[in-house]
Length: 143
Image 1 (spheres, one colour):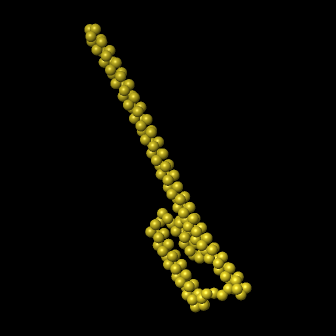
Image 2 (tube, rainbow, N blue to C red; image 1 turned 60 degrees about the horizontal axis):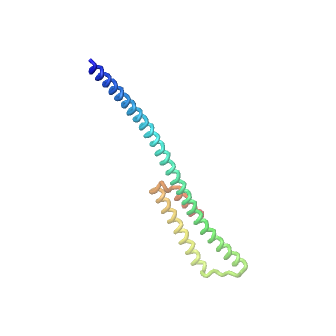
């Protein structure tokens, strides 16, 4: 009888330990689910931040490209203004005749048109770079 009572006590203790272990496992699983959800949220936020960063880099690159083209245009316009002022003062004579200058102007316009078509084609093919390419189209169109 004593042995039966001891065995019953041991069984109760073992059952209690098993129940406590099962409760601990359940709590750990709940914690794991919560942490997985937090990780998923953090991953989504990280992805969003990376995408925003990429958009910002593309925007900066487009602005840099546009600024470079604008500087080039400004330089060309300054040279032209100096030549026009010198011509108005009678101190400048073009190195080429009207026919050559007209041909150069026509070639420049043809090149600008080809550049516009190339940039438009690229913007259709590479939509992720469309802000930068759109900026290029605007800059080329102003030239």
